[in-house]
Image (cartoon, rainbow, N blue to C red; front, side):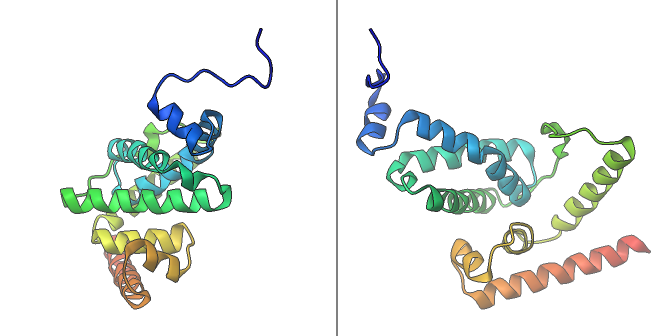
Length: 187
């Protein structure tokens, strides 16, 4: 006879570790489900390749779930996961010293849009990807975290492990490069 208060049966050491850390499997699954799309988009913006972003998203969640004690405070957990995702993407870019872009159209869309809107969005995405391709990984990361993720400069500096002045420099350089790119494209 199974009741509401029965302890679920667990199958391995990871499950025992999650109980010991006070984080249930359901909690872990909810954490992953609640954050998956956001973390994927964050990583995709940094690495620019859907396949690498998928792999790195999985890697970021594995890293997060290995330190389950951090998941107890839900407010801090999402922020902490973003930091892991950023560092995972930056480490990848450093290791491979490359960025290759592919269309994000492979990702499922949340809503239907007109063909005109789809064409415009595709054109804008191509332009943005081409512009971001001209930035260094640090410039791209600083710009995305500050302007897209809307993080304060202090947090960007903390995530990139550098000073606020360095973050401002990266962002300024990135904006100059993007502005020059836009000027060349409009001619």
